[in-house]
Length: 559
Image (cartoon, rainbow, N blue to C red; front, side):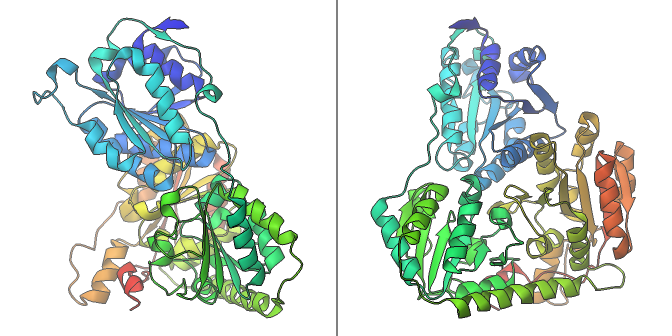
């Protein structure tokens, strides 16, 4: 037991968890924490230019490293600016601890300076939101926050600390390593449910495996591959989880859902048994209808969160378990069964759809003309990117083309907004991801509109020396909205056309490297040079404003 100031106690709680970075903006309500960080050589305070950037960087760090991350802000607008990034972490199941200072308790409910009900604001987008009510409880509540963030389906937790508690007298801080207050265990699957699932898969004529985020979280990519090979089952991935299985495998057809591969949808629609591993079959994976998930298909769903089982589709077998543990048990049961139907024709059907997708993408790589079409840019990126590179896609039209057009060879190499869908996501996420995985290249892909949402973090990247490469596909329109207006209200476009600076020149003004690429054949060399420079870099690529994705609303309605 050690006596520490409340601010030192907060820092010691972070140190116990191995926190190496705290992202935020200095604020008057948590100066005691900042002062304690001054002496913490093992924890670096990364001063960002906007609290949204701080929360997104923490999210990116957590997603890339698999470890908890921390962001901090002052009360009122500082805290509310964190919400967007914390919402992204909530959607991505990232263990982010968001900390906010709060007004002193003796002025609460008086409409004090920057007073807001932080806990009520954060509660819908976190696993839990709490206020520290006495300084003595700081160690306990921080242990609880990390336990909540890291157990089960991971996610963000918010902690509010009134400033008068941080000003208080020293408190007792117990020495408690994380294993003493949070225990990591892989929730096993019910053996009877495993046996039922194995029997359905063994009897299936057209099984398909849909691999989701739970496969990545549980390190189960190899197990999915072994199951697919045993069953001769095509593999597809849920929305934004393309890296759940190696895309180069002969049984991988493509990503399912919105902006995914049509061929993946076709093979899924033909399945008689669907093994939905670590996925809730969410909106942009399935559209909640039967275009991909046949009404006649038997669904085996594995989810660590029991509330998601059967939530969007009726299941033949619902297994609450760690995806990796459940899949390994199913694999072992299947290996003990002697009878399996001949699936040669089904395997050939999957291989044909995989080949059609590859031929389609290869054909796009030959497209010529200016301005460059986004599909051609991705064709060049496939040639340029090393297999270990982490790709971070923003929301919006141009990044959406990437879901079907990038290859992923290792889990944990794709970061997307998922159903959060927030513009401006990718650049700060990439900065956090690079700090979480400094040994691999990290590339952010933006449209012009989204990039300007958080462009101020270029200063953070340059000051902190974070060598992220950002590709900005510039079509001078809000692409997704333009696509909607052209499809639903032809000739009545409003607010969708915008203008931009030269992003390469803007990058140079911040002190980063800037590139401007007008020829598709130059993309590969420029991307390679930017990665090898080991500096923050922005590559602007003018792209065709008339090349827009099919509007999501029309995809949802089947129109």
